[in-house]
Length: 153
Image (cartoon, rainbow, N blue to C red; front, side):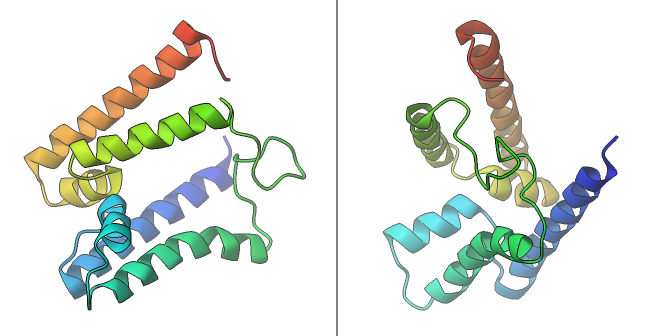
């Protein structure tokens, strides 16, 4: 068993939980990434943009800081010298997947962070149903791509 990867996952999970708790405790906001970014990009709320921008910059800066201190990015690279490898299914499939995820967050009124992390912690039945839907859709998608279509590893 790779204890380093498990420890990194544990630390990452704790940091996500702490950031979600901090945001709720200090601003009364749910740490739903799709809502934070969507509102920042589409409506640009006056007086409400600073914390959203700081949150997004924190998300983006995490991997940069990890690289600067000599850490790796885990299994995102295809070869030892690469930072980010070629998308497993190719760029068109990656773009389609991103579009479908965006549509799904709109239809589900949130994403895995808003429903899965924050909603479940608040014992929201709606978030439980949404999270189960996300997980089942992910399982079906992986099965179809790997075993029906025959793509990627």
